[in-house]
Image 1: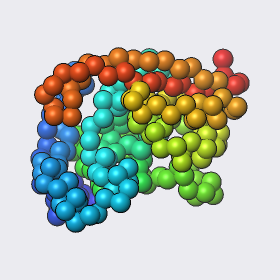
Image 2: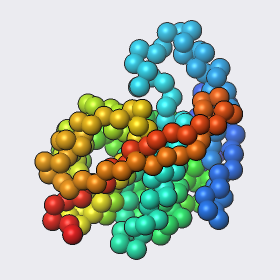
Image 3: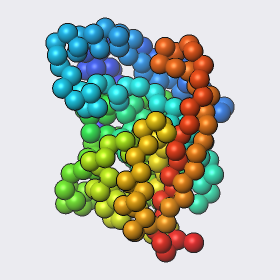
Length: 241
């Protein structure tokens, strides 16, 4: 994506009311795009009966998911060994922004939704990170030949992707082809959306390490405090030590 920041803001602004909000990660402060009229947009989708499949038709790509921050903290442990990162299902690209703080020299931020890609690219340009982060459309569920030109990566990461069971088998195949032999794949999912099938499929080809992390956050109203449990899955090739 090579469009300018103003062009992309105009494009997305034709659909949504936009503003930027600060996001602080360690000592770094980012300006992150926010959709200010999301409640009105959701009301419109409901009134026009545009929501046929909630997982695909709702603008989930615009939400800043806590799982991205859980993964972001884990990334800090591996920057001495890994330099290239692929983020799958990136949405607005928060994990990729976080990774830029921790020494990754090359980050590929991907999604399948056009608006998600636009929003992620805006965040990259707004924070002057285009030298580190590239934004690109990528559908893991597409036939393997469509990924033929994609390189191997030291690390592949995704927040809130494993709840999509139709992606489990193609995702395992994707990791086989695009994760470096000594690389690491990291996944984080809210425990309420836990789907064990992916781990069962991946265990046939990879070494897995599963864990759980509790996070203090707020409920969907943005006010009520709550504690949520997140499942973390680390995936390595058998050959890796």
